[in-house]
Length: 511
Image 1 (cartoon, rainbow, N blue to C red):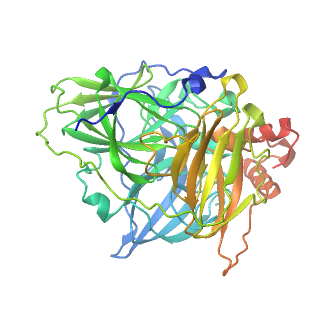
Image 2: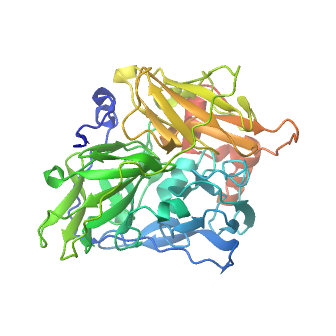
């Protein structure tokens, strides 16, 4: 039976970021092509059959991105982005989170199902300069491509823009038996998609580029590489693609519409593979795709584009023939029944610019907006009411869980949304129904993942609770945060200006 190949981007074209008033078009870099940087695997400090020990260090540095002066950047265990952390399912992780930056940060494990709020690493788990926070957790979720990024509200966007975004890979025995490429750096390749604007002396200037609807830059940066190429030496290549941008959507396709197969999304391997020629990712979404270069003559180049701008050039070399085919069914995923007599939870994302809110409110650090019992399975309806100037797609993200997308306005979700997800793009005027359950207790955030929107207040908090083991949490407050950052910057707190706070100030609100 011939499988269908999806040739459109699914999302509402009228809501693409290309229609934003502040849209910054991508431009093809004019600098020489250079090899795609592959983030190295982070070496454990110690490892046993049951436990793994890591040190993850946030640090400042300089990175040669363009000819001339190096760019001042931040990264994890390096000057930019991060070394890739590997979590084996069933093992217990012991991680020292070391902050060598000049200001406080947090370490958020995006997509990892761990207790909140401190292990999860949102705004309530600050690590101050020169300090180390230790976390322990057992890995208990399917193989997936996750990521680590800073999350110190309301400076999340600025710190991610500085470079604090690295990959975390969960591995398990189920995925290991599937016929996927998995030789990391050879045929199993991460692609962290970001964009930047370079100012004088090749430096980034977040405040100069600030836009409350999301900071963008004209230069695509892939794995911290400008104008990259990759040497293809195998017939099949697995790409682990992350939209790691603050704002930008990526509409991906290869030259000559070379088809590719998506095998995994945010939370891991999908039940069935889905074939595409065009794929759109919203902020924080991940897609693992397998590209078959078998019909490409060695010596030719296949280019990955976003819209009409080249991102990565794949230079095809000689390779051994690979006749492996993917099975029609890949994995079974959990799909628990909804807990009886639980009402559908309604969440409304609204606004643009400084007016962004969830359920008519801006985020407050010490306010719990919702509660859900651990183990309960509930339906959430996520609505995007935004219709200003045609509106925009809001990517909805939840900490502490992977959910299932059930429907879009009562219709089937997109073809690649049948797996576990932690982020879903919601079109203007649309309601996306998801099935949600928590396996750990804690306070977790849910928010739009246009990062300037979450900093600007499009965020709320839920407590996943166990009635038999009630807990209390020390939640960060805005005064403590502002005083700490002001002290770190050597200024009076009244002179401290964090870009995300402008959304509160212009609405006459406080965080």
